[in-house]
Image (cartoon, rainbow, N blue to C red; front, top):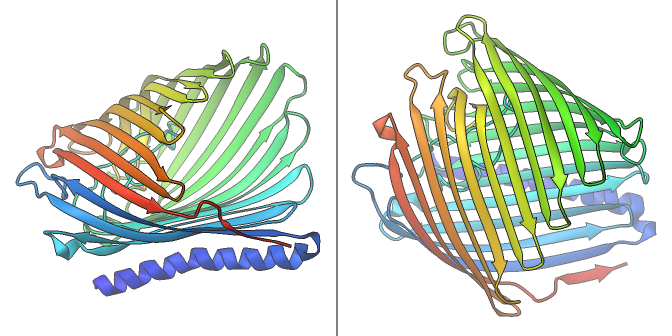
Length: 450
């Protein structure tokens, strides 16, 4: 079974490569007469990681050292009006004490674009990831926030069963004027778990948006989306329609405010208690302010109401605020929020969640060759749709150091702390992890110009 799962992951990774090859043929065949540039940058990294709780359990935690060898490359083809970039980093993870977890990791990405004119641009992207690390940063991303009606909250994945995610998208943007534009797109996401206790799922997302500025001060931004979510057991499968309209007023080059309304309708395939149809109402207002070239701030406040068909309504006031400071040697960011989102199409399907979150992150270039970064976050999630309810408190902190030893040699040191406190005891855990990684890469990519 493990062999079949690995082969299946390798085949999906080859899909990304196949898309890149097709795009290369298209670009070269259509624009060879205009000239092109090809670059190829190989690399290899070796990392040693220690975790004092590899299975993320509260009782009887298991510690281990994990050695990973990862060769990889980034290839790029550029023409005057198009390009494609492919990166692939396969790695083999070896556990010192728990060798039953030894496995291949695959990380591949494709990015391609074509400009049909100065106003029209087509973009394609695909990201493939297969890993056994439950905290890879892809599955439990507390930093990612979307609209409340379609947002995603962190879910707790434990154990070392491999899983695969693939996210692909295509979008077309057309400029109508200085600030006006229209965009159309489609995105597909897949989650495939080797763990039979976690349901596989996938989603199809079509969207269209317009930014229209009839004057230098006023802007109108309507947007519509359709999302089809599909679960393996079909219990949670649904159709989701969302529409929104924002009215923007620009006080100056650096300050603008907006009022916005978003409406969502959710229709589940099956009429069961754990899949209750609803409509969501989401009026809000906000401001975006650029104090200087280095300092940017924004804030949003609104009211969210989810009107369920068979159960009582849920909702309340919410806010989101963030600020960034970006100078030549130092970068700093701060985020805070309280509101509602939905934990679904991830490792767990938890439904509507009321959250409070806080995040701080920063980077500092000590010298030309030495960089230090740090981050810390807190999130409280209260699950409103789960029958047993429950509240999870997520804590995390990380500290990293990057040092360029030679022109072709880099060292990364990293420490991370993760903790979950929960009203459901089985969800709790604490983990400390440290890592050292050495990467070798040429000082300049190999280049061909025609």
